Image (cartoon, rainbow, N blue to C red; front, side):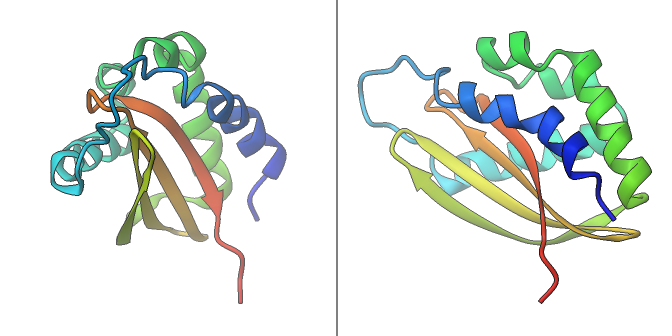
Length: 136
Protein backbone atom coordinates (compact mmCIF):
# COMPACT_ATOMS: atom_id res chain seq x y z
CA UNK A 1 0.00 0.00 0.00
CA UNK A 2 2.03 2.95 1.19
CA UNK A 3 5.78 2.90 0.94
CA UNK A 4 6.63 3.52 4.60
CA UNK A 5 10.28 4.12 3.81
CA UNK A 6 9.36 6.96 1.45
CA UNK A 7 7.02 8.52 3.98
CA UNK A 8 9.68 8.20 6.65
CA UNK A 9 12.28 9.76 4.34
CA UNK A 10 9.96 12.63 3.56
CA UNK A 11 8.66 13.43 7.02
CA UNK A 12 10.79 11.96 9.78
CA UNK A 13 13.35 14.72 9.91
CA UNK A 14 10.56 17.29 9.98
CA UNK A 15 9.58 16.00 13.41
CA UNK A 16 13.08 16.75 14.67
CA UNK A 17 12.89 20.36 13.53
CA UNK A 18 9.19 21.01 13.97
CA UNK A 19 9.52 22.48 17.42
CA UNK A 20 12.64 24.53 16.73
CA UNK A 21 10.82 27.24 14.76
CA UNK A 22 9.27 28.92 17.74
CA UNK A 23 11.71 31.12 19.63
CA UNK A 24 8.92 32.88 21.51
CA UNK A 25 9.30 32.67 25.29
CA UNK A 26 5.57 33.16 25.94
CA UNK A 27 3.13 30.29 25.76
CA UNK A 28 0.99 31.52 22.91
CA UNK A 29 -0.23 28.66 20.78
CA UNK A 30 -2.50 29.82 17.98
CA UNK A 31 -6.16 29.00 18.36
CA UNK A 32 -8.09 26.52 16.25
CA UNK A 33 -9.87 29.42 14.59
CA UNK A 34 -6.57 31.09 13.69
CA UNK A 35 -5.17 28.06 11.89
CA UNK A 36 -8.31 26.56 10.32
CA UNK A 37 -8.14 28.69 7.18
CA UNK A 38 -4.37 28.38 6.88
CA UNK A 39 -4.38 24.58 6.96
CA UNK A 40 -7.05 24.54 4.25
CA UNK A 41 -4.93 26.83 2.07
CA UNK A 42 -1.77 24.77 2.67
CA UNK A 43 -3.48 21.50 1.73
CA UNK A 44 -5.19 23.05 -1.30
CA UNK A 45 -1.84 24.33 -2.59
CA UNK A 46 -0.23 20.96 -1.93
CA UNK A 47 -2.96 19.14 -3.85
CA UNK A 48 -2.70 21.65 -6.71
CA UNK A 49 1.06 21.11 -6.95
CA UNK A 50 1.77 24.71 -5.91
CA UNK A 51 4.71 23.85 -3.70
CA UNK A 52 6.16 27.36 -3.52
CA UNK A 53 2.84 28.55 -2.13
CA UNK A 54 2.96 25.83 0.51
CA UNK A 55 6.50 26.73 1.59
CA UNK A 56 5.52 30.39 1.92
CA UNK A 57 3.71 29.34 5.10
CA UNK A 58 6.77 27.56 6.56
CA UNK A 59 8.85 28.86 9.43
CA UNK A 60 12.53 29.47 8.50
CA UNK A 61 13.75 26.06 9.70
CA UNK A 62 11.03 24.25 7.75
CA UNK A 63 11.98 26.22 4.63
CA UNK A 64 15.55 25.06 5.07
CA UNK A 65 14.81 21.43 5.94
CA UNK A 66 11.93 20.87 3.54
CA UNK A 67 12.55 23.04 0.48
CA UNK A 68 10.12 23.11 -2.40
CA UNK A 69 11.92 20.33 -4.32
CA UNK A 70 11.80 17.88 -1.39
CA UNK A 71 8.18 18.74 -0.71
CA UNK A 72 7.30 18.06 -4.33
CA UNK A 73 9.23 14.78 -4.40
CA UNK A 74 7.57 13.53 -1.23
CA UNK A 75 4.08 14.52 -2.31
CA UNK A 76 4.46 12.97 -5.77
CA UNK A 77 5.74 9.77 -4.15
CA UNK A 78 2.71 9.78 -1.85
CA UNK A 79 0.36 10.18 -4.82
CA UNK A 80 2.17 7.38 -6.67
CA UNK A 81 1.56 5.08 -3.69
CA UNK A 82 -1.87 6.24 -2.56
CA UNK A 83 -3.47 7.45 -5.78
CA UNK A 84 -5.05 10.84 -6.18
CA UNK A 85 -6.26 13.01 -3.34
CA UNK A 86 -10.04 12.67 -2.96
CA UNK A 87 -10.75 15.01 -0.06
CA UNK A 88 -10.89 15.74 3.61
CA UNK A 89 -12.85 13.42 5.88
CA UNK A 90 -12.48 15.28 9.19
CA UNK A 91 -10.11 17.34 11.34
CA UNK A 92 -8.97 17.31 14.90
CA UNK A 93 -6.87 19.81 16.83
CA UNK A 94 -4.29 19.30 19.57
CA UNK A 95 -2.52 22.06 21.45
CA UNK A 96 1.09 21.13 22.21
CA UNK A 97 2.53 23.85 24.45
CA UNK A 98 3.17 26.77 22.05
CA UNK A 99 1.98 24.84 19.01
CA UNK A 100 -1.33 23.89 17.48
CA UNK A 101 -1.42 20.59 15.61
CA UNK A 102 -4.11 19.99 13.02
CA UNK A 103 -4.73 16.39 12.01
CA UNK A 104 -6.61 16.22 8.73
CA UNK A 105 -7.92 12.75 7.97
CA UNK A 106 -7.72 12.68 4.17
CA UNK A 107 -9.05 10.23 1.64
CA UNK A 108 -6.92 9.11 -1.28
CA UNK A 109 -7.94 6.72 -4.04
CA UNK A 110 -6.10 3.86 -2.30
CA UNK A 111 -6.86 4.63 1.33
CA UNK A 112 -6.67 7.12 4.16
CA UNK A 113 -3.81 9.25 5.47
CA UNK A 114 -3.64 11.86 8.19
CA UNK A 115 -2.00 15.06 7.01
CA UNK A 116 -0.61 16.59 10.20
CA UNK A 117 0.24 20.28 10.12
CA UNK A 118 1.76 21.91 13.21
CA UNK A 119 1.69 25.68 13.61
CA UNK A 120 3.96 27.78 15.80
CA UNK A 121 2.87 30.83 17.80
CA UNK A 122 3.30 33.02 14.71
CA UNK A 123 0.89 30.79 12.75
CA UNK A 124 3.71 29.44 10.55
CA UNK A 125 3.99 25.79 9.61
CA UNK A 126 6.53 24.26 11.97
CA UNK A 127 5.82 20.62 11.12
CA UNK A 128 4.26 18.71 8.25
CA UNK A 129 4.00 14.97 7.80
CA UNK A 130 1.70 12.17 6.76
CA UNK A 131 0.58 9.33 8.97
CA UNK A 132 -0.81 6.14 7.54
CA UNK A 133 -4.16 5.12 8.97
CA UNK A 134 -4.01 1.54 10.15
CA UNK A 135 -6.91 -0.61 9.03
CA UNK A 136 -9.05 -1.76 11.93
